[in-house]
Image 1: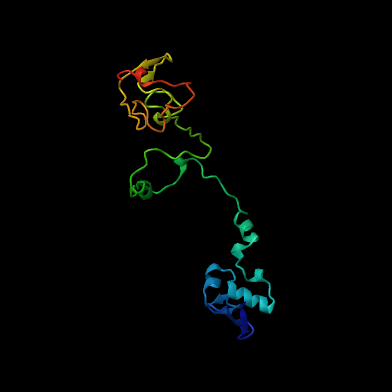
Image 2: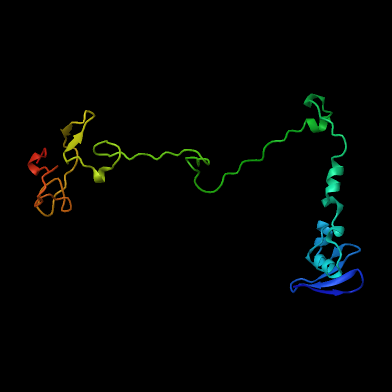
Length: 198
Protein backbone atom coordinates (compact mmCIF):
# COMPACT_ATOMS: atom_id res chain seq x y z
CA UNK A 1 0.00 0.00 0.00
CA UNK A 2 2.78 2.41 -0.99
CA UNK A 3 2.32 5.40 -3.26
CA UNK A 4 5.46 6.12 -5.34
CA UNK A 5 5.80 9.50 -7.01
CA UNK A 6 8.95 10.17 -9.08
CA UNK A 7 10.71 13.47 -8.46
CA UNK A 8 13.23 12.83 -11.23
CA UNK A 9 14.87 9.77 -12.78
CA UNK A 10 16.74 8.71 -9.63
CA UNK A 11 14.69 10.31 -6.82
CA UNK A 12 11.29 9.16 -5.60
CA UNK A 13 8.79 10.28 -2.96
CA UNK A 14 7.28 7.21 -1.30
CA UNK A 15 4.17 7.62 0.88
CA UNK A 16 3.23 4.78 3.21
CA UNK A 17 0.60 6.58 5.30
CA UNK A 18 2.82 6.68 8.38
CA UNK A 19 6.24 8.13 7.59
CA UNK A 20 6.97 9.24 4.06
CA UNK A 21 10.40 8.70 2.57
CA UNK A 22 12.39 10.56 -0.07
CA UNK A 23 14.59 7.97 -1.79
CA UNK A 24 17.70 8.73 -3.86
CA UNK A 25 18.86 5.64 -5.74
CA UNK A 26 22.17 7.15 -6.92
CA UNK A 27 23.32 8.16 -3.42
CA UNK A 28 21.47 5.20 -1.85
CA UNK A 29 19.83 7.35 0.80
CA UNK A 30 16.37 7.75 2.28
CA UNK A 31 14.96 10.28 4.75
CA UNK A 32 14.11 7.42 7.15
CA UNK A 33 17.93 6.82 7.31
CA UNK A 34 17.59 3.01 7.23
CA UNK A 35 18.93 2.80 3.67
CA UNK A 36 22.26 4.47 4.52
CA UNK A 37 22.70 3.00 8.03
CA UNK A 38 21.98 -0.66 7.21
CA UNK A 39 23.32 -0.34 3.65
CA UNK A 40 20.27 -2.36 2.57
CA UNK A 41 17.19 -0.99 0.79
CA UNK A 42 14.54 0.14 3.29
CA UNK A 43 10.81 -0.28 2.67
CA UNK A 44 10.64 3.04 0.82
CA UNK A 45 13.61 2.13 -1.38
CA UNK A 46 12.11 -1.29 -2.13
CA UNK A 47 8.87 0.36 -3.24
CA UNK A 48 10.79 2.77 -5.48
CA UNK A 49 12.91 -0.04 -6.96
CA UNK A 50 9.75 -2.08 -7.62
CA UNK A 51 8.13 0.90 -9.37
CA UNK A 52 11.09 1.50 -11.68
CA UNK A 53 11.69 -2.27 -12.11
CA UNK A 54 15.29 -2.40 -10.96
CA UNK A 55 16.82 -5.45 -9.23
CA UNK A 56 17.03 -5.18 -5.44
CA UNK A 57 20.36 -7.00 -5.16
CA UNK A 58 22.21 -4.25 -7.05
CA UNK A 59 21.42 -1.78 -4.26
CA UNK A 60 22.63 -3.96 -1.40
CA UNK A 61 26.08 -3.38 0.04
CA UNK A 62 28.88 -5.74 -0.98
CA UNK A 63 29.35 -6.62 2.73
CA UNK A 64 26.20 -8.75 2.57
CA UNK A 65 27.26 -10.70 -0.50
CA UNK A 66 28.82 -14.14 -0.55
CA UNK A 67 31.81 -12.95 -2.55
CA UNK A 68 32.85 -10.60 0.29
CA UNK A 69 32.69 -13.43 2.84
CA UNK A 70 34.78 -15.72 0.64
CA UNK A 71 37.31 -12.95 0.01
CA UNK A 72 37.67 -12.22 3.73
CA UNK A 73 38.84 -15.80 4.40
CA UNK A 74 40.74 -16.30 1.17
CA UNK A 75 44.11 -15.41 2.72
CA UNK A 76 46.34 -17.60 4.86
CA UNK A 77 45.36 -17.70 8.54
CA UNK A 78 48.38 -18.60 10.63
CA UNK A 79 48.13 -20.17 14.12
CA UNK A 80 48.71 -17.87 17.09
CA UNK A 81 51.09 -20.28 18.83
CA UNK A 82 51.60 -20.82 22.54
CA UNK A 83 50.68 -18.12 25.05
CA UNK A 84 54.30 -17.74 26.15
CA UNK A 85 55.27 -16.76 22.59
CA UNK A 86 52.80 -13.90 22.32
CA UNK A 87 54.26 -10.42 22.05
CA UNK A 88 52.02 -8.62 24.54
CA UNK A 89 53.13 -5.13 25.66
CA UNK A 90 54.02 -4.80 29.33
CA UNK A 91 51.46 -2.06 30.07
CA UNK A 92 48.66 -4.35 28.83
CA UNK A 93 50.07 -7.49 30.45
CA UNK A 94 50.23 -5.80 33.87
CA UNK A 95 46.53 -4.93 33.89
CA UNK A 96 44.25 -7.20 35.93
CA UNK A 97 40.67 -7.57 34.73
CA UNK A 98 38.33 -8.65 37.53
CA UNK A 99 34.79 -9.90 37.26
CA UNK A 100 32.05 -7.30 37.70
CA UNK A 101 30.72 -6.90 41.26
CA UNK A 102 27.87 -9.21 42.13
CA UNK A 103 24.59 -7.48 42.95
CA UNK A 104 22.00 -9.52 44.82
CA UNK A 105 18.50 -9.51 43.45
CA UNK A 106 15.51 -8.34 45.44
CA UNK A 107 13.53 -10.91 47.37
CA UNK A 108 14.33 -13.96 49.42
CA UNK A 109 16.95 -16.26 47.86
CA UNK A 110 15.86 -19.74 46.85
CA UNK A 111 16.85 -22.57 49.17
CA UNK A 112 16.49 -25.36 46.64
CA UNK A 113 17.76 -25.29 43.08
CA UNK A 114 15.55 -25.80 40.04
CA UNK A 115 16.21 -29.22 38.48
CA UNK A 116 17.45 -29.18 34.90
CA UNK A 117 15.57 -30.66 31.97
CA UNK A 118 15.39 -34.45 32.15
CA UNK A 119 16.62 -34.58 35.74
CA UNK A 120 14.61 -36.91 38.01
CA UNK A 121 12.78 -35.16 40.80
CA UNK A 122 11.30 -37.82 43.04
CA UNK A 123 8.21 -37.06 45.06
CA UNK A 124 8.48 -37.13 48.82
CA UNK A 125 6.35 -39.94 50.22
CA UNK A 126 3.87 -39.07 52.96
CA UNK A 127 4.44 -40.49 56.45
CA UNK A 128 1.71 -40.75 59.04
CA UNK A 129 2.53 -38.84 62.22
CA UNK A 130 0.36 -41.26 64.24
CA UNK A 131 1.42 -44.77 63.22
CA UNK A 132 4.71 -43.73 61.51
CA UNK A 133 3.81 -45.74 58.38
CA UNK A 134 4.41 -44.45 54.83
CA UNK A 135 1.73 -43.96 52.18
CA UNK A 136 -0.91 -42.04 54.15
CA UNK A 137 -1.30 -39.31 56.77
CA UNK A 138 -3.00 -39.05 60.16
CA UNK A 139 -6.29 -37.90 58.58
CA UNK A 140 -6.96 -41.27 56.92
CA UNK A 141 -5.00 -43.54 59.25
CA UNK A 142 -6.68 -46.95 59.81
CA UNK A 143 -4.98 -47.60 63.15
CA UNK A 144 -7.56 -47.43 66.02
CA UNK A 145 -7.31 -44.54 68.44
CA UNK A 146 -5.28 -45.43 71.49
CA UNK A 147 -3.07 -47.91 69.60
CA UNK A 148 0.16 -47.57 67.65
CA UNK A 149 1.83 -49.91 65.18
CA UNK A 150 5.33 -51.02 66.21
CA UNK A 151 8.13 -52.15 63.92
CA UNK A 152 7.09 -55.80 64.50
CA UNK A 153 3.59 -55.03 63.08
CA UNK A 154 1.97 -55.62 66.47
CA UNK A 155 -0.64 -53.23 67.76
CA UNK A 156 0.42 -51.81 71.10
CA UNK A 157 -1.63 -49.57 73.39
CA UNK A 158 -0.64 -45.99 74.05
CA UNK A 159 -2.18 -43.01 75.81
CA UNK A 160 -0.41 -40.22 73.95
CA UNK A 161 -3.17 -39.16 71.55
CA UNK A 162 -6.09 -37.04 72.72
CA UNK A 163 -9.36 -38.83 72.09
CA UNK A 164 -12.33 -37.07 70.56
CA UNK A 165 -15.95 -37.45 71.74
CA UNK A 166 -18.78 -38.52 69.43
CA UNK A 167 -21.74 -36.15 69.32
CA UNK A 168 -24.17 -38.96 68.37
CA UNK A 169 -23.53 -41.80 70.83
CA UNK A 170 -21.38 -39.71 73.26
CA UNK A 171 -18.63 -42.34 72.97
CA UNK A 172 -14.90 -41.61 72.94
CA UNK A 173 -12.42 -42.28 70.17
CA UNK A 174 -14.51 -41.25 67.17
CA UNK A 175 -16.86 -38.55 65.90
CA UNK A 176 -20.29 -38.41 64.23
CA UNK A 177 -18.91 -39.04 60.75
CA UNK A 178 -16.96 -42.14 61.78
CA UNK A 179 -19.48 -43.44 64.31
CA UNK A 180 -19.97 -47.21 63.90
CA UNK A 181 -23.04 -47.62 66.17
CA UNK A 182 -26.07 -48.86 64.30
CA UNK A 183 -24.02 -50.44 61.46
CA UNK A 184 -24.53 -54.10 60.65
CA UNK A 185 -20.93 -54.70 59.58
CA UNK A 186 -18.70 -55.68 62.48
CA UNK A 187 -15.47 -56.06 60.55
CA UNK A 188 -12.63 -53.90 61.89
CA UNK A 189 -14.96 -52.49 64.57
CA UNK A 190 -13.92 -51.84 68.14
CA UNK A 191 -15.67 -50.48 71.22
CA UNK A 192 -14.98 -47.74 73.70
CA UNK A 193 -14.32 -50.22 76.50
CA UNK A 194 -11.41 -51.70 74.48
CA UNK A 195 -9.59 -48.36 74.45
CA UNK A 196 -6.95 -47.93 77.13
CA UNK A 197 -7.85 -45.20 79.58
CA UNK A 198 -11.64 -45.25 78.90
